[in-house]
Length: 163
Image (tube, rainbow, N blue to C red):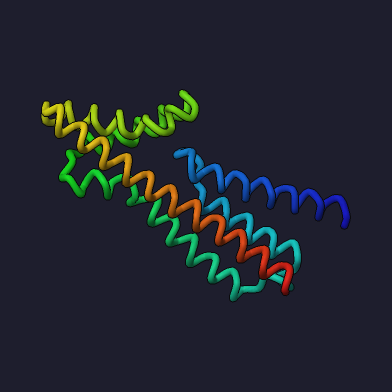
């Protein structure tokens, strides 16, 4: 393998790792990074092992993953009729949580949603319920996205090594 191909595969690997990380870090676009890595990997091989059929399947899974990413947190909040401020608070909590490490990533969306709901409606118990529902929605979404990510990487590897 020549130097350029080696660098290309290194970039594929970095994109896939960044895509996996994007399932946990809200500012990293997981789905596009993963698909970009798959597309680059297929292109580096001249689409010989991973052809357009496999890429179509991976694209469909990428779209599903992006939809899950978009609705996961809001689903839990909306299930309880959360205010707009709670949804905004959950998003801000997730983003700000990045700077506080793992505890911030875990508790940021909950705190943000609860704070937003508390500001909007002034009811402490309701704010706690909305915060918990938002957090559970994000947790379910994260598990679903991670599962899809691993499945997609597995499908790409399968296609590459059997192709």
